[in-house]
Image (cartoon, rainbow, N blue to C red; front, side, top):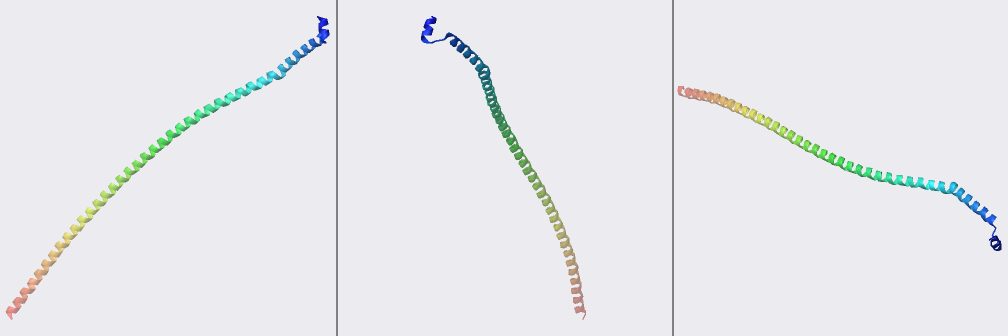
Amino acid sequence: MEQLLQAFGIDTKLIIIQIINFVVLAGALSYFLYKPVLGMLEKREEKIAQGVQDAEEAAKAKASADEEKKEILSAAHKDAEEVGANAKKYADEKAATIVADAQTKAEGVIKDAEGKGEEIKVQARKESEAEVAKLAVLAAEKVLTQKSS
C-alpha cells in the first residue's frame, strides 16, 4: 500500500499533519469565531424579540389610552350638557322670579295709582261740592239782593 501511495506522490505524514492542522484550525475557528458569532446572533434575536414585544405592549397601551380618552371625552360632554341644562334651568327660574317681582310691583303701582286717582276724585268732588255750595250761596244772595232792591 505504501508503494501505491508513493506512486501517486502522497505522503502519509503530510496528510496526518494536515488532518491535525485541519482539526486544530476547525477547533480554533469554532471556539474563537463560530461560538461568539452565534452568541451575538442569539443576543440580537433576543433584542429583536424584546422590541417586538415592547411594540405590541405599546400598541395595547395606545389602544387602552384611546379608549380612556373616548370615555373621558364622553364624560366631559355629558357634564357640559348637564351644566348647560342646569344653567338654562337656573336662568328660566331667575327670569320667572324677575317677571313675578315685576308683575307684583306693577300691580302695587297700579293699586297706588288707583288709590291716588280715587283720592283725587273724592277731593275733586268735595271741591266741586264746596264750589257748588258757594255758587248756590252767591246765586241766592244775588236773587235776594235783586228782590230786595
